[in-house]
Length: 208
Image 1 (spheres, rainbow, N blue to C red):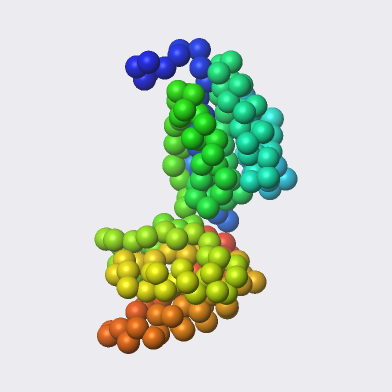
Image 2 (image 1 turned 60 degrees about the horizontal axis):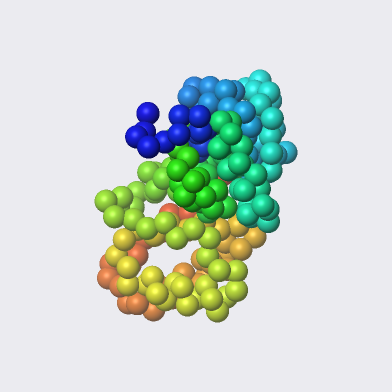
């Protein structure tokens, strides 16, 4: 038990969920999702499929980028009353390129215990099989949608020696690759900078 934490306060669990293959769910994650009072999910329809697979009947509530401030206040209130809550994203580890960080920040400010339930992460899974250096890397998340802003950010990263990890929608990935070639290709780097493109991670048609 943490010193200074109200013993009647609930706990906020940050639960990682599969990024594609439902068999990647951990025993601990299943137990926590079963035992908490409510699960805050980015997309309740998506999470309901996961819960049904594991026969978990815990109530769901939506928590996403468009309601995070209002919903965070309600969830913090429940935590203060003693309810324990699990936060999940659509896939992988919450707060990695999703709005979960706001709820966690509010919980910390309210001195509510926050506990990670580690598991799948698309960024780390891709890095692990990329063949690229893993001793130093930077996760950049989703790049700006507008070409000019995207090129500006890539220019700022062009001299970074670390392995860089990006997320991108399949509808915009070609544009991102073209911009990466345009920006990084002008550096005259020797040897040429290597890249790995990973899609459908852990699924039937996974490609690297």
